[in-house]
Amino acid sequence: MSRRSRAREVALQVLYQYDLNPDTVAPIETFVQQRLGNEQRLIEFAQSLIAGVQQRARQVDRYLGSTAENWSLDRMAVTDRNILRLGAYELFYTDAPGRVVVNEAVELAKRFGDQRSPSFINGILDRLLRLRDSELSEIQETADAARVEARATEGNTDSPVTESQ
Image (cartoon, rainbow, N blue to C red; front, top):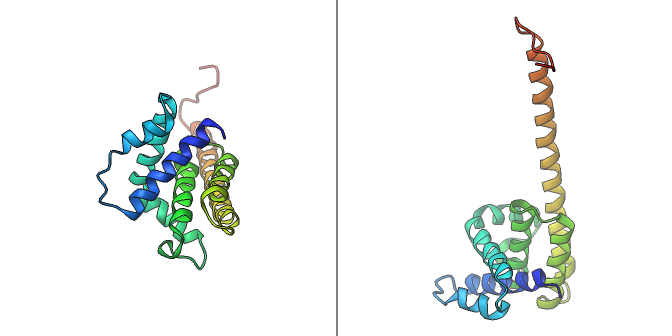
């Protein structure tokens, strides 16, 4: 298991704890440090995932709720729900490659979920990845169109600007 995979596993365990016991005041930092040893970069990575999922919980849950056809979040197994939250957060709010995020989530599902969890997780995160990619594509197309329009507008000014200026 890679070190970042281990950090994701620890993040999942903390998210699971918070999901079942939202009023937990447990020393989470201590738990993360004990599980990841003295590897400060991994500790920071795990803590950033935990904090990110918690801070973006509403938006992440909205993404999942709209993508998980015929499944509400409260009907999902707690483990699956938190693997999906972690994966959705990474897909939309980090620069981690999409395929890596999906594969890492599927591995977590194999380790902590039931027999059907890996395919369930894979299906939902794959849909989210396609949604993210289509949104990025739309954003890129809009930006490209704006650049073309700006160039065309530049050509219509009283004092034309050339590339050499």
